Length: 230
Image (cartoon, rainbow, N blue to C red):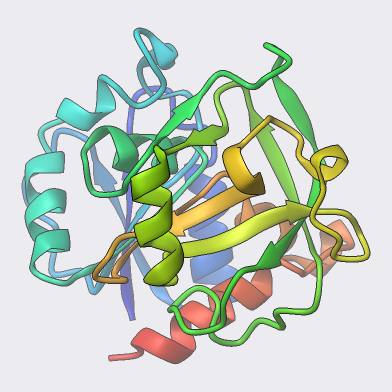
């Protein structure tokens, strides 16, 4: 598979994502600069974490207007696979490719630590190989990760299995205490109605290498590859 990883001014997880896909998952990867207009025939597009444009205005609000996004939006609307982690998730929400918004953490602080998430379903590209009864340890690093959507939107998302992950404790219990940022309904990741655009606040690329003592995130990449091999 050929993955394109988009790099914005302020991206800081781009090479982590490239390493996970190219070296750990043994996939072809190209780096796409935010001013590029050529997607180089990629099969999938990844928006990595970081602080695009210094998070001025709102996280992802400026990156959403980067030149490459016109083609990313077209690619997504034509059914192409698009995945954003952390800042990438924020950009996809700002671009209208995912429902909802990422707000400041409820404690108004930047949070960087390992947390646990639990798959809400097992019928999407990101979750097909995951165990719905298991908790996966994945790091977070964000100041604006509190997911929000209105009641009507949440109802539609629940019915359509668009909620991917919820924050939980190490035993898989979903609770207010296990919610690191105040996200509504403990939501940590979502997808669009067409189930080809995905976003999550935790960083699976930071939990995919045995050298780090945690490969829970690798299961997410394995799930992706099992579903969209071309």
